[in-house]
Length: 133
Image (cartoon, rainbow, N blue to C red; front, top):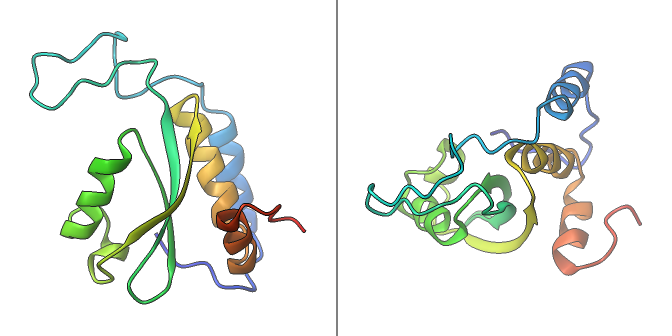
């Protein structure tokens, strides 16, 4: 994932990507039958478990946005350098903000919305203020 500069303006490519994401069905891609994984160690997610969109602050002060079903596990992966190329060289990272989403598609759409915000708007979102103000 690339960093979004303060003067970022969505391109036609970004708008097409957002449109493709909005066309995704709201299904859970991790659980094929909605059942409990049970037999696989550490895999206990169920289809009704929510997805999360999160914002991290990296050691260099930059912000990173992503999606996951397990916030604690994902944060450990980021700090271990096994989650994303972007955060691998910017550890340690801290979780600043997260919100739940009902499905993977909804989480991806929200992630893209957040990535299109300016840094100031993201800081407002983290602080609990309306980022559009």
